[in-house]
Image (cartoon, rainbow, N blue to C red; front, side):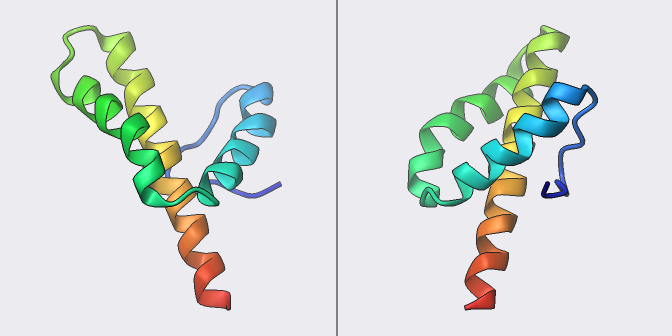
Length: 78
């Protein structure tokens, strides 16, 4: 199981599934992640509902943080 750098899952299901999501998202080019990350970043910055902000923040950390860092590590190894 790959350890995540930016997002630390708390539940057992999240600890198992989210590293797989991050690795799968790391194979997508950054332009393909933009339609998902951009609205989440907007919600995280502008929403007044704390739960929505927290979930949007976690999505951004998982996709824009961990997936991109996995992609960069893989490309540097080549």
